[in-house]
Amino acid sequence: MDSKSEQFSLIYDQYIEKIYRFVYLKVNSQEIAEDITSRVFMKAWEAYNKPGAPIANMSGFLYQISRNMVIDHYRGKEKARMVSFDDVPMVADMRTNVHERAAISADMEQVKLALRNIKKDYQDVLILHYLEDMPVAEVASILGKSEGSVRVMVHRGLNALKNEMSQQA
Amino acid sequence: MMTEKELISRFQTLKQIKPNGSWSFSVKSRILNTEFPVQKPLWQNVLSNLFAIPSQMKMAYAFSALLLIFVGAFGIAKFAGQPADTSLLQKTEPAAILGETSIKTSIEAFKAKSQSLAMLSKTTVDPNSKQVAVKELSDAAKSLAAAVQKDPTSAKAVATELKQDGTLAALADTNSDAKETSDIVYKPLVEQLLKDDAKTTPTEAMQKTIANAKALYDSGNFGEALILLVNN
Image (cartoon, rainbow over all chains, first blue to last red; front, side, top):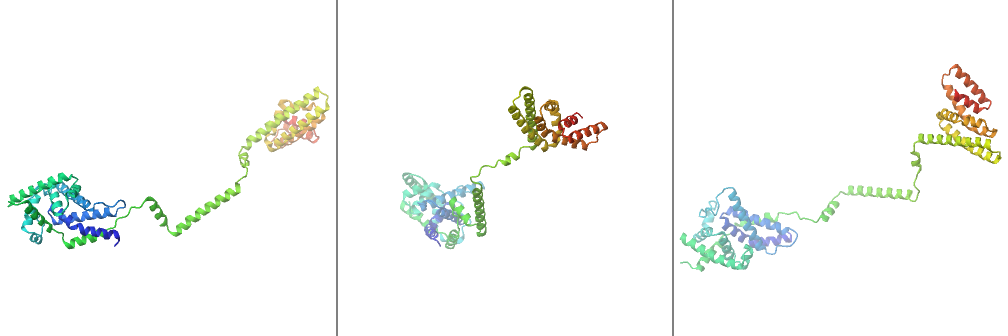
């Protein structure tokens, strides 16, 4: 294995869980999340091998590809007149297997359902800030928003999530 | 009522979501085994294509180039510094036009010199002037005789031209030098006309004329023989 492969292998190990989780929470399907995540890393590997300036912010780069691919995924679904995640948020993914369901606690299931029902922008800031432990500045950089705007979105996102969970209780 | 801290704590339980280990490993292997063609600069592509040519073809190209250089160098060494060859240009001019021009020029020159000599014979007694005129007439006669010998078919036309112009009559009246000079032209003209007549089937009258002309020719009276044949 050459040096580039070794370097990218480390990057892969560092980000695979985070990217998979980010995508999974957006699409709510193991199969689709695996497909999108693998394509994200394939695209990143291709970009990593291109001659020229190296990728300065790998984390931001991977999340940006992930967000675009999730958006493309939903656009494709709309075109195919398939059931949209946003249109029917309360419907659980039937492809989630029994083992997976058992592994996820009741609390997790409740949070997942609540997360699906809030705005996509709120989903992004809450996942990146509280699950991936990114500082506000980095979240702002990835989403292309100001730090102040991200802080407001974090606050509103938490309120929206709290309201959703209160309604489910 | 749930506090914000509790909410965040419950939200962070989602960190337990992880990808399948075997799937993660297989994707990693598949991605790292994918090779992307590296885009090389144009000059590198050209060089690599050049080096990719088989060695036998390389030798053939090298030999061809060497052969071209050798032939070029040989050609330059052979012809460098030599004047341009104009002979080819001269050869390309139509021979018929040249021959026609030569006969006409010779006739005109012969007529002019004959008239000059005839005039001198009548107007001056200076022997030097007559000698010069005879010499010039001799040169013109030789030139015309040579032109007729080159183109024998023009003999009849030349003889007719000289008769109609009065040159034959004019020279008949001059001295013996002029007669000898004019014979240079008359002799070949008579010979050619006799040859031409021998090829035809003459009438009785013509046969008599030809016989008389031959007799005059044999006796050295070329001028009279020519006049007889032209009148025929």
